[in-house]
Length: 110
Image 1 (cartoon, rainbow, N blue to C red):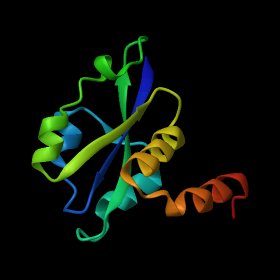
Image 2: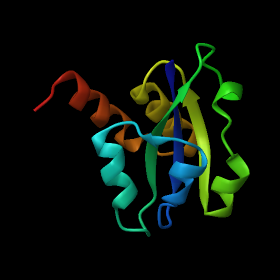
Image 3: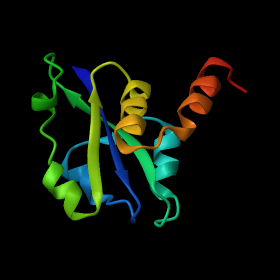
């Protein structure tokens, strides 16, 4: 089994039931914390899903339309890692301001 990572962007209450519905979970502790943040704050949450050995967007079986119905949008996906999914999501959603800061945090923890 492999992990498939995807990022969702939204500024409403995080739809917790989607974790069950799409059989996914927050990719990292920081994603779990982002999901709980104030509902009016636009944010990216990276989620992970266990998939078979063919890691692809199609094997993940995401329900984009259902995410949209809650005011969240699936914006990127990656078979590589959670950070790759987050970086792509920042670019695709226009939230690039924190991208360099986030990369520095990863390179220089603490």
